[in-house]
Image (cartoon, rainbow, N blue to C red; front, top):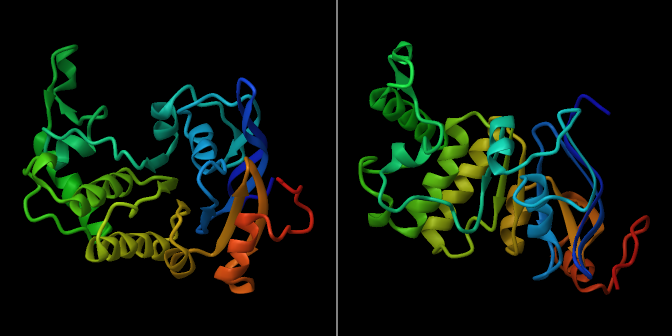
Length: 258
C-alpha cells in the first residue's frame, strides 16, 4: 500500500438480511485529497460512510487507514483513530454551549493526581475551541451560547469546527449543507476550502453538483449499492456524472449496477 493512501476499502460490503445495501466497494483516498461521493437516494453513500466510521459493522471486506487494517467497534473508536465525521444529524447537544459540545466525551481535566476526583479545565477547553474556530474561519459571536439558540448554519459550523479542534487525520461530511440557506452554505464551503488549503483529506457526500465541482478533486459515483464510476473532476462534467448516477452510462472496469 502506498504511503500516500489515507483510506482504502477492499470489497466493502453490507447486507441487511436480503437487502444488499453495499457491494464490493473498492475505494481509495490520498493525502490532501478531497473526494465527493455522489449517487441517488439509496445508492449506498451513507451506508458506505457508516461502515468506515464504525456506526455499523460490515458484512465483509477490509478497511485500511494509513496503511493499517482497522475494525472500529463504534464511532468513538473511529474518532480516537482520527476520523471526524459530520453527520446529517450533527450529533450536537442542544442545551450545551460550544466548548462543551466540542469536548463532549473527551473533556480536558486538571488535577488528575486526585485519582477519580478531577476538575474540568474550562479555560483550556475554551481556548482550544477558539483555536478550532479560528482554524476553520468560523465566526460564532458568543461561544457560551447554547446550541439551541443558534441558527442552522451556526450549528453546522460548530459540528465542522469540532473536526478541526482535534486535528483529524480524515474528515467526512455527509450532506453538510442540505438544510442550509445560501449564506450559511457559503460559510460551510469556505471551511471546506480552508481544510483543503491546510492539506487535510476529506470525503464529501453531496447531491449538490455545483458544490462538488467547486470543492473536490475527484468524484466517486454510487448506484444501487455499487461504485459505478471514479472520475477526475477535470475530466468530467455535471451531465456526465448524472449519466452515471442514472445508469445511462457505465465506466469501463466497473460492474453495471442495473
